[in-house]
Length: 185
Image (cartoon, rainbow, N blue to C red; front, top):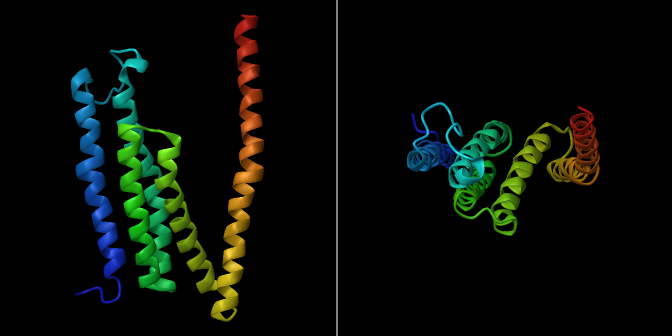
């Protein structure tokens, strides 16, 4: 059975999974070999600072796992309930951005370079979530899309401007508390 209309989401899903399995996970194995790190351990034989290429490869692979489940769940819900073409276009943007992110992180994790891959991935995630909300809201399509955009923007603004700042301060206070406990011993 051919998935008529769902070619873009299907192809993006398959390509990402193939890339994850045969590039991202193989990169971890390739980075593990020079250090002779035995499975499942990751840093048992060396100073972690000396393992930076391995740790970057492992972290890039782990980050793919952290991001993929949420994106593909939202992308497929959007494809089914709103539009598979819309969803598929953003799926391809996300897949290409995530492939670039993993490569950049493994090779040279400059924050400025990573943003070129991170921003399009987040925009794609926001777009498919907005698509889900658009399909659910009981308004005409333009009003539902505008309302969804406002909801997505509100979450992004809250996360970036409010929660990120609050949690950063929380962690800083927790760090100070733990350091003081160590000094007191």
